[in-house]
Length: 327
Image (cartoon, rainbow, N blue to C red; front, side, top):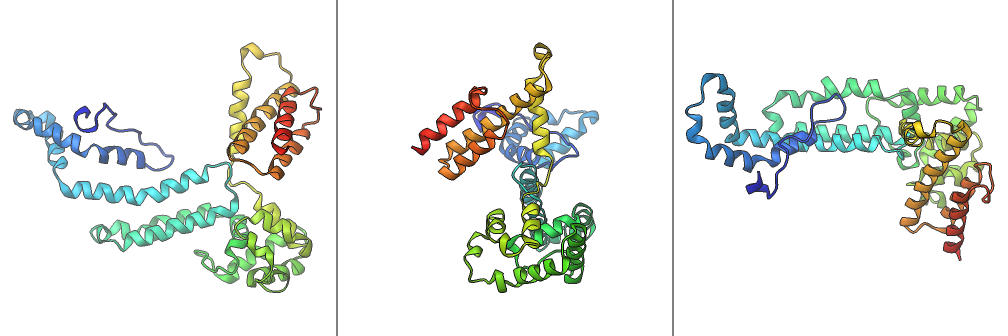
């Protein structure tokens, strides 16, 4: 390993679990091709004396020199990479429910392309993976709220490429969503139709469509013109797709609370946790040269903790930093 890679590295970088894909493990084995071949090349004569109990080593020696094995391994890497990337994105604390169906759709398109590849012609399982594996999993994971979030995303307005849903089906889902939210569902559906067709108050020539890539900004811009649909769409656009923020809060709580700080009151723990989280947010914003509007928004949110800057030195430091940048 040192001769081929210049350093000692682990043969396999991950173990088999029920979470995520095994891409890291497959890539690790794929990168060790030269090292494995050199290892067995040096032991060719020694392998002749291997007894039957160690016949697996002889099988491995044959496999290492099999070009078809390494080609299949590379194909597996290409197959898993987009799926692994989608899993990582889905675990981000910035992802919302409106991003769920597009990720599934991208994976489906990726699998369709794979099924047309020459490697798939040799393996019937790949050609049938969409019907046997993907479709049941998709229908299990996708809820009606994901469909609503997809439909209310301005980036997808008029886009009928919604896998496994016909227009009557997704319109029924949208109707029952409006009914459950206790809004004037007739007016809401009329406004949605204008949005979907880019007509009326959503005419495609209006400046609001310049914010189509920023769904929150889009609906904040136009919600006054569509009082039934706008507030609902804004709430959906801000709904997170996972519980990562909550899990992260518990992890921070574990860092703050220990046997040496057992007498902290719940109120003080809450304040410490608030400062810890927002200090990291502020540092991230400052590193990417935030706009004055974004900095003022952070300052306003910091003030909502319910105490003044004098009582809270951390907030006072944030305020001074913001004022210096603005000046």
